[in-house]
Length: 167
Length: 444
Image (cartoon, rainbow over all chains, first blue to last red; front, side, top):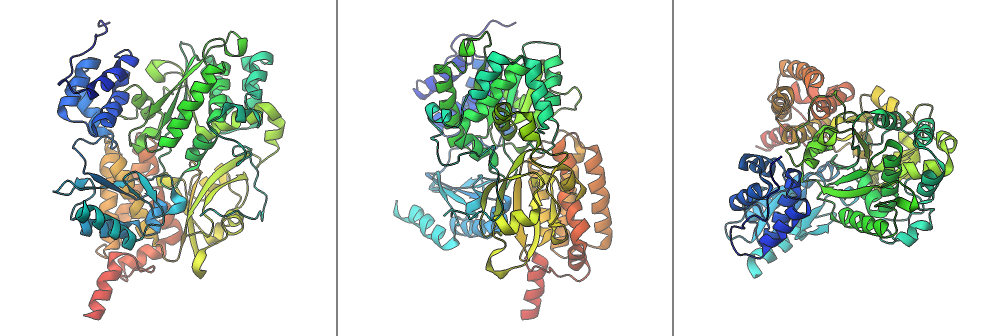
């Protein structure tokens, strides 16, 4: 057994690293804390970049390749900063049957980016989801964390235009 | 938005009992629905083999989809050599169109945790994990809250209810990988690794989390445990069909008048579910199919609406119980397009470890894309069928083995729609690109 590592040195004196370190400590700096720790990085910083991955690798005494492998395997982890607003279109079966593809197409036209991308002015990130588990409200679009059921392209257009023009 | 629904046929609530009467964040409220009565009874008056015997005699089968007998699974883990042993609750509800487990975890967190605790006593585990999708923040919050309250009231932790039995539960978050619903991939994920499945055997019952004997059951399975031990195996076994006992929670959505969750006895027919409980198809449209079993399932046409729904009958129809999503489709949905939708899903969610799934799903997706664009020949269709067979029989895990199912079931019941796209270059439902090409030509 490798000796359990003590507190790893954070990449900067940003206080948010303490949250990440606390998560690792709660799990005794064991390798199985990797996914929980990546969640905590994303919660604190909004995304998981190379610097964070190297820090986590040192903290849990894992090869950086394994941290990178996990971070890129799981869709939930964002590797780049997200826009000021996020717009997630659910593409689950019920939403698909009820026209989610058209909704997504409309949003792509409006923002000029594809799912997974952020507008050049960093205002809006467009994302797609597998299923939000809100199928009774299909089609579903989540705007800044708020679930909007029975989404119509018109209402979405108004909202997204508000984001891109007025703030 | 959700209207009260008149009961045309009786729903029967075991999992979703007393729906509106309890606050899911209050342990005291859980007592109102006999909370922890089963756990207290089990810990003070039953031996672990007696608990397993009750479960076996109840006939409960895994609600995650495959329908493996729960009692038998518990017994295997109880007998397995090695320690410690683990209990895992699979709350990684990934099938699009399925939201039963989300609701159960949000509305009855104590019930799921009570089921897990009884399981731990029966198999001799001291640590449990409940693995929940990160996309379900409310479920995560309520489970964590429930665990804290149970610890405070000594229903979790050391010497539960004054007995020598000790058990802890931790929540683990998923991170958006569909394949992690597969049990060996889920275990890899809890161990902090990529969610790659591995060949079975050895099954998790013998070689699971950290190499130790591990019991994995679905959320709904655990939610059935306390009611069974409260009311007895005979009571549970009196509900349902010969081989499928109890009730099943289904998530109704798609082209249906009343979408939502229902709980019906096993053996209820699709017609009763779709037309009586669900209120039928809105806007005067005609029923075409109901899709069950998610990306590993199939589409069931109107000819089979009167078949009683249980594990075996759905398999015979070329579909799958799955976790309980039912997506209703009417004449405006194209079955080829639906098959392509699911293939895209499996292609993107394939973990890439085994070749048949990684490459096969991509090839099948391309063939289906050719068909919807009207560029395919009958040879392509034959190739598609060959690939279906190959991917089904040679993939490593359930994701790949099930991936051809939506294609095979739509080919079985809606072959004419494939032929229309390939030979007549038209989409009968008018949704595929081939239809739009033709329209452009006509207007030009």
